[in-house]
Image 1 (cartoon, rainbow, N blue to C red):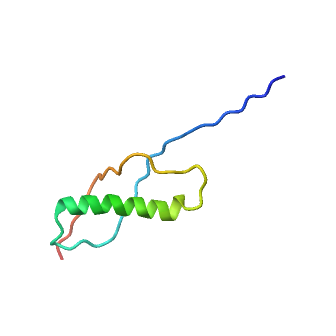
Image 2: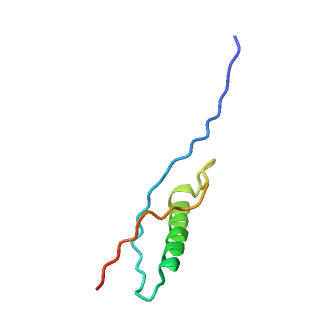
Image 3: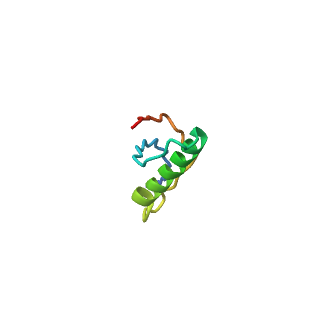
Length: 70
């Protein structure tokens, strides 16, 4: 009887909430760029670091930004 080996590649979507402050002088484009960069860094440092076979594919998709005037 023959034996079959298989390897699966799976892509997951992960949502990350960032609670870092941005000042009111931060342009919206800069905020989007920094949010994407921060999410990738956070995910890499907290989840991927030390994991074999795990990597980020694709670009971050910013789905929302909530502001509060203080």
